[in-house]
Length: 365
Image: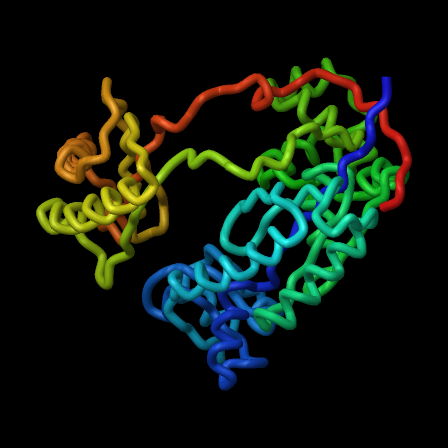
């Protein structure tokens, strides 16, 4: 039995939030820019490439970012604007295929094995899409092209910004063998450190380990690692990707020490969460309270109800219970409420890992 390779493109916008801000405000072009946070409060959501040269990146504090780059300019995020731009970009994607799986506002997978343009070359389609995004939207994008989502995702980061890389079917294994294990999508910092300790530094090193060895050291993930270093990843591009959780959170202007003040904040967060749930027409059973302390340590507390909820009053009651579940460790800079275990979740056979071997044929890429 044989099967054709799929032709998958991963499109990733370059420094999306920061690039939108620079596009809308020409005075910011060419300057180090951070979206989100400030030099006093908050966390960096995105950084321009000019800021990244100084080591500024997402998820670091505004204070740390300013130390790294004294000339850094902070701007508040405008998510409505980012969504507006994202819709324009997705409209371009759908001119080529309906098999579009958005991962976030600024990236998506496209399956162009069969496409609306009848173009047999995924590489040329990616070039055309990037050109159109630049001409019609005014922003640059990078792309990775390969036989599956895993390799395409890694490849899209290869020639950033404003570039693309194609990993042809007969190049996949050699490409992965040379790659540092920390660049494998899905291998986080902790797992990478563990692999380094086991003498696994590259895809080649990972490939030398038996399935039994990997399952012994990495549990259920062992089979996944065994497959991906061989370029096997059978997950299809899913246009209707199910939402797994919905949340809302607030970073405060000043750290809060009193639960009474926190209750007031939880009220507005629960109201916002209800609004988002109603917009998505979903509800959930598991409510999680997220607490970020003034020293940036994070704590979550969860409770699962026997029924689905989306009502702000019920969500607020549960969040308050979780707040008083145990004493707070420190003053609090951020609170968030999220809801999981949603009524849109259903496991299908295609979602489960399949132990299978790919038989691969060559075709024009």
